[in-house]
Length: 400
Image 1 (tube, rainbow, N blue to C red):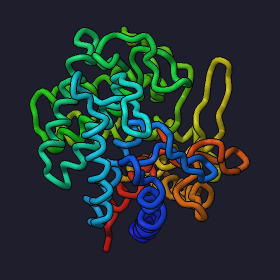
Image 2 (image 1 turned 90 degrees about the horizontal axis):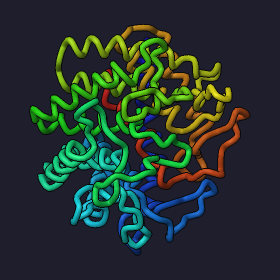
Image 3 (image 1 turned 45 degrees about the horizontal axis):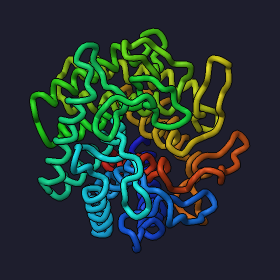
Image 4 (image 1 turned 30 degrees about the vertical axis):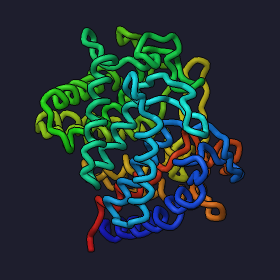
């Protein structure tokens, strides 16, 4: 029964990826006039040719189409990945100071040169994925350079972990936030999670001893500091001394971390660490169930002071819940997790997929009405979470 359920799921998500998600980005987001990709399409479908272009968006496009080509071998995906790679290397890399810029204007001129570690990590993640399909050593070498810059400027060699952001010249800055809604703290779960993700991908192709050491250390930061030892939710914000400043539960980050932590341990190959992380990953997946609604969807987050629950169902949270619960099923054998992963996909298919205009809505509210105020594609609305969900399922489940 399980192979039948999972093969059906695989067929459905492959269709979603190849017929809806990826064609949207290839047909609507190409910037034929200025190069690369348009910076924004709003929730109503309006294209903004003059929108700024974010590094996170471009890197996530590069990762998505590189990974899609690696798994599915469609030459159109390779062409799109090459376009993104060329633009990233030409415009986003700071040739003077090293690292990647945070933001460009629509013509490719640097608009915000700050060195947000989150963006450096996504550039590593993407360049390595392109290297995996091309063996382009320029991409691998650039990814290694970014790793060394993160270690040089961001790594806390006294208390461990990574500081959030720096000036264009890698100096100290006051505003460290990824976005206006984030706490202005020196260390965050979110940045550490995506450094972990980037270092995991880099270690797949570059078995460097120092990288191995730092990736192992980062895993121990999660198990020892970021994962709450009492609740197994993720603590989100910290000062430089690792004092917890968290005032919320982020259900999507919980379930996303549950499987990324285990993947990092697997890539490192340390059996004791794998077993330790396996248990912690399952505990995180288990507490993530608190955010699951009867219809299979996962709510966004819960605040403590003042107490408030955000019931919106964001696109990326639903995508990560599918992957996280399916991997929890594979680790535990508990049918409950399988059913939760399948229910999450059923919700996505029924309510988040935009079958008229392509891609997915940013979110739906508690009444299941689509959110058209937020972007369909833009600085944060990228093809990464939903495409990765599809690709993980396609790669993992093949019973033919």
